[in-house]
Image 1 (cartoon, rainbow, N blue to C red):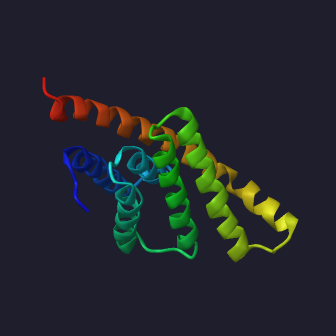
Image 2 (image 1 turned 180 degrees about the vertical axis):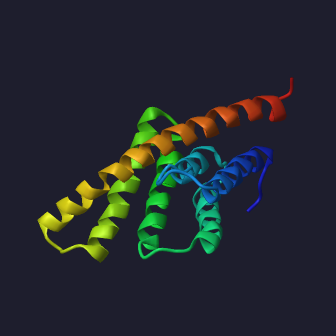
Length: 162
């Protein structure tokens, strides 16, 4: 992959996000969904938009550990990156859609691998996940805002001719 200056700036924000993932934080209040959406929305290369967040997640998971639902987590990040690629921006709508996608896909994996395969089991799984979803929404909106406005500021002051 060949990165231009804009892509290197995007990459630096994604690397910063993954560093924040490694420091102590409230449960599920992390920058990872924002990172995937941001990459999808701002990388010039669509392959980098999907691959870079996944590669960086995998590298950080080497330190944090992989879980039994890793396939579903990474699949949700592909979807979130595709949302960014499709809309090419970060808005309330794209952040909410990304959060919902992550919630639905990962908890489907939790149900599939850890709950009875009944409608009751499915309902119980998603119901018990709601407190985590609240925290995910907080993290997704806060970190998306930080990444978006931080990027705009840095782009204006570092990459544009004054």
